[in-house]
Amino acid sequence: MEAVDRAKERVIPPRPGQPIPWFKAPVLDGNANYAISTAAGRPMLFLLFGSATDPRARAALDVMLRHADMFDDQNCCFYGVTVDPQDAAQNRVEPRIPGIRYFIDYDRSLSILLGALSHAEPSHYKPQWLVVDRQLRLVGRYRLDEQDRAFANLRMQIAKAAEDSWAPVLEVPNVLEHGLCDQLVELYHGHGGVDSGFMRDIDGKTVQIIDHGHKQRSDVIIEDPTLRDRLQSRIHDRVNPMIARAFQFEVTRMERYLVACYDAESGGHFRPHRDNTTKGTAHRRFAVTINLNTGEYEGGGLVFPEFGQRAYVAPKGGAIVFSCSLLHQALPVTSGQRFAFLPFLYDEAGAKVRQANNAFLGEGVGAYSM
Image (cartoon, rainbow, N blue to C red; front, side):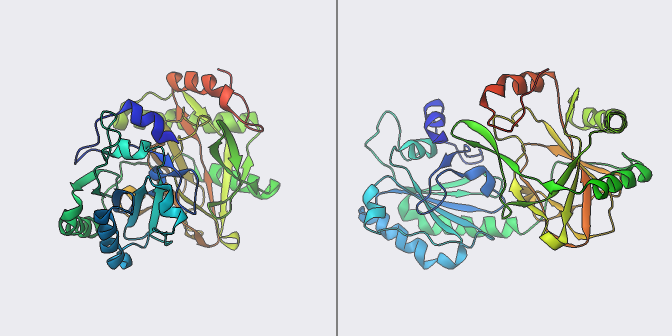
């Protein structure tokens, strides 16, 4: 579990106003490697209770269950943390999806990470409530008997999360000429797309996963070197200078030449994700979404859940540029087909990271050479 290493690195728990550390941990009757980073976009209530045999913990769990209707994975989520294997074995706690999950923390690393335990006092569990906002920042830490304050804060965070704020993204119009956009769409139609997966680290290797519940998209790889050069020159001349101006970052390298299609007939979409969370993608710095046929489809907007539900749509030939660390999703296309050119950008430092991580690439994920 990722939390084991992070707990050793960070003994001091997060304070209000600080982001909670990203961790992966098993959830009861669910994902064995649940990534908290992908659950951002809605407030969260954590109950670090240790063991449900503790009368104080049992009372706190009962309080949560009296408010169970609040937890629906849309407005907010609840996460309990148990260190007692008998809690699950004796059905003392039970998940309810959507909204209510329990992290299994038998090695206590997550409890250390979040502040219910310390290395100095590994047997002294301090049960508590944590309130976390939609950007994964800790906004409140409370004793078990302070449940009224915890729920009041949670309601305030839910109200705030209903409001949209501006995500730190850059819109760059007129990157590709309309004729070049049309050429790319024609290329897709001429070849037909293949199923597009996504990267995930499994057993220490970055592998490609196909899961239509998470992502439904088809891609065509651009092989023509002349066309690739044209596209690279547009990014170099029209996007890179704007990244330098807005983010003070010098792009020197570009990854991926493909035309992507989100098709309404197949339910084209991509659920919330980040673009640099595996060994094989850690080098990526900026993602670029260039729409090729804006106005010819419905749906398909780009959303950044940590900042609300505003959908970003670039004009035809225009780009939305954003950090690969931002949680984002492509909303379902509800009518027609949405076509896009989707490169990633990075620099020389990123290139070194990419080459160094060749050892962690699984079968079918091509090695990289600078």
